[in-house]
Every structure is written in structure tokens, then in C-alpha cells.
Image (cartoon, rainbow, N blue to C red; front, side, top):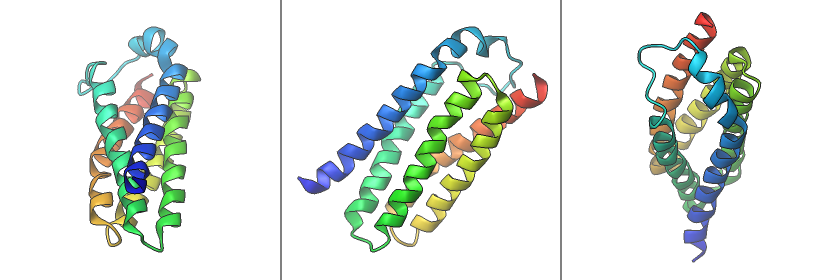
Amino acid sequence: MRKALNIIIPILICFLVGLSASYFQADAIKNWYPTLIKPVLTPPNIAFPIAWSIIYLCMGLSIGSMINSGSERTRFFIKAFIFQLFFNFTWSIGFFYFQNPLIGFLNIILLDIFVINYTLKSYPVNKVSSLLFIPYLIWLLFATYLNGYILMYN
């Protein structure tokens, strides 16, 4: 039961962070975001909640797998996970709530660094945990491109 909770609780936390962030971005997504010049590769709005649902599930599974691994470095990875989750949340506030692509871009660069760090450092300890972060990393790098484009052209 404990091992199941070690996975279920992080998944729920990830989804709660995402749900909380959506509260701060709802108005801007409706009124501000549509007015921006965006790259041709910008996905339709419906793609974002689908992608983030998959990513939050993978993120929760990743840290849950790390917790269940019994590694002596588990505390380090929990801290690294919390840092990246914090920057994940605050990106929505900077970019959408404050409607500031520059703050969003600076935030997402830090987020990229934290996610790359977690992905690379977790690989030798728990390959599954690391691989579960790959969809997140790919989506995040794409989001960095989108944010950078919006910053440059708006």
C-alpha cells in the first residue's frame, strides 16, 4: 500500500499544481493570449490540457518511482523535483497572469535547467524515473521555443 501511495500522492500533487496554475491563466488565455503573434507551429488550445495531463501523470510516476527505488539519493531527487515543480507553476503566473513573456521566458529557462538536471542525474539511479521525464522535457523545450517566439514578436 505504501508503494502505491508513493506514486498516487505525487501524481495528485502534480495535477493540483496544474489545476492551480490554470486558475491564474484562465483570463489571459481567453482575452490576452489570442491577441499575440504566435509561431505557425503553435498547437491548438485543446492540445495543451491533453499534453499537460500526460506530462503530469509521467512526472508523478517518475518521482514516485524514485521514492520507491530506495536510493540513498531520494531526498536529493525529491528536492530537485519540488524545485522544478515550483518553476513549472510560476511560469503560468509570469507569462499568463502578469502577461509578461519576458518573465515567462526567464522562468522557463530556469525550468529547462532544473528538468534537464533531474532527467540526467536520475538516469544512473533510476532509469525509469529519468525516462518518464523525457516527454516533459520535449514539451518543455517546445514551450520554450513558443515563449521565445512570443517574446520576440510581441
